[in-house]
View: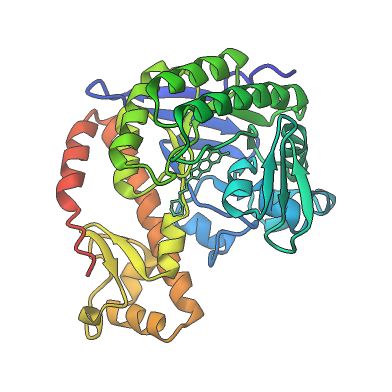
Length: 376
Ligand SMILES: Nc1nc(=O)c2cc3nc(NCCN4CCCCC4)[nH]c3cc2[nH]1
């Protein structure tokens, strides 16, 4: 049973007008400035981006997935080749998710029990059992800097009693994860469940914090609930979470969700939205989202986003990006992903600046005013 990796996170500054805070999180692969967004690199790659591209868009930490890497190529293979950092040539911090959520959202037949989750691989239909202990061993073998407890993420439609019983099992699993975790220097984060019920959220939060982890995540969100429900859980949980530990919301989110979550006092985020939307031609700009395949851009020689300083916006026209997308060119995914991640990471940089200068409440008001979401 390891204690917390003390002294890795510190709050540098708080904006007195709201919950927003500036933090520093030290890891064996470098120091992270928070609030931060983590590009999703599920299969040991952030799709369409090389590590050099990731540094160029100012990524600080990326996420990879236990479920996927366990099934392919296998965590023991990655370990034998020097671990995930060496395998994918990413020398910055890596966080791995624990697999529970992916089993439920990807696996075929699956059966949950106190032991863990029995599931069929979405790749070849083979049967597997993922337990808290195995999830920790996989994440230790991959060598991530931050690993997540194995938990159950109830569906947004689950009833009160199911969510209540589920959070109790997630707490028992969290204890097993902490017992199983022994890799020095590697941080273990606990995950708070409880659905959309504030009393169950408080119960899960108290139980997970009582076990003691290096950081705390809100799970069970961004599963199809209304924004108001998501924001309500953020608002009720943030003040109850330890002030001196990183606060991570899993699977969040759209730019406006990040602004809202930072305003409430959250520090870390991950979402496939910028990378997945990029591949579908949905691009984020200072004036809101645009659909690059729209005919309106056929002869538009201007930059994707005049306010963006990224290589794509300084080099290519909307007409060219539209052409690449419509032609099904690989470069479309590369350039669109590069810009969307630059936009997300630059949004985090701008939020950190606003916190530092005690003007985050104004930043949040101006941000909402700028997002016309024209979806053209
Ligand atoms: N271990 C773990 N526990 C969770 O409760 C969890 C909850 C999550 N909720 C999401 N939502 C992802 C939503 N995403 C939004 C863009 C389109 C694809 C789905 N990812 C999650 C990952 C999670 N991981």
